[in-house]
Amino acid sequence: MKIGVFDSGVGGLTVLKDLVDNFNNEYVYLADLKNSPYGEKTEEYLENVLIEILDYFISAKVDLIIIACGTISSIAIKLGIKEYKGIKVLNVIDAVKYDLKDNVYDNILLMATLSTINQKRFAKYISNNANNIIECPCPLFVPLIENGNLSKEEKLNVVQKYITEDIKQKIKENSAIILGCTHYPILKEEIEEVSNLKNVILPGKAMVRYIIENNLLTSEEKLKTEFRTTKNSKILNKFVNKYFNETKVTEI
Image 1 (cartoon, helix red, strand yellow):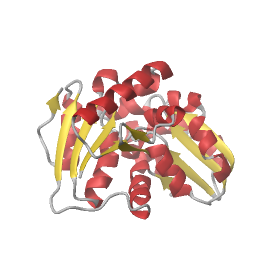
Image 2: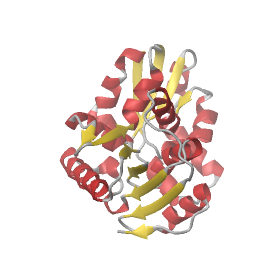
Image 3: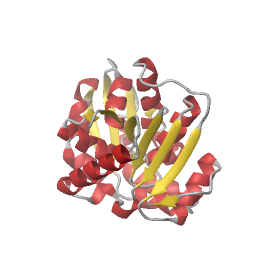
């Protein structure tokens, strides 16, 4: 099976890594760096980006499309896209919602891009899973991660800007953190350290569970990964090499 996976940059690689670790298939990963960051774009702009990328994957003859981006997943939900030109389309918000299932927390801290938070769809989607949802836009996270060269201390300092003492008091008991942007799992260690909370829901892990429990994908004999980008980037090459031991990224 040929699977198209996309994000605005390196964040979706966290989802791809979980997929690759669980299912042998042929993957085409697209990093849309030309339009990055998605979190700063208007909904109208992102709707056009989504359709353009879906059409690209249709022309690439994929059998399944996975939106590995919280911001664009929200747009797909707005447009009601579960399938496109006969091809099933999965998104990480649906996967996270599935992962929550019937759990009801006192508090959920939703950490996401400014665009995702402003759209309000993610919080509304999971509203039955918490008595209180704390929406936390984290505009510095994506540039921080895409920079790729910051020290542990610098990462902790940025995380502390968002997980304040007030928030830490609210999420002490019966709480969860949702990383609503697929870049953010790269900071999982720092987020857990600052928040003192280990119940962190990751979009890639949620997607794998969603796929397995709904029998949407099976492993094949061989694994193949191909990396494409709308704009070349040394940092993308660095992360591809780090996670997949690959060096070839093709600009389209």
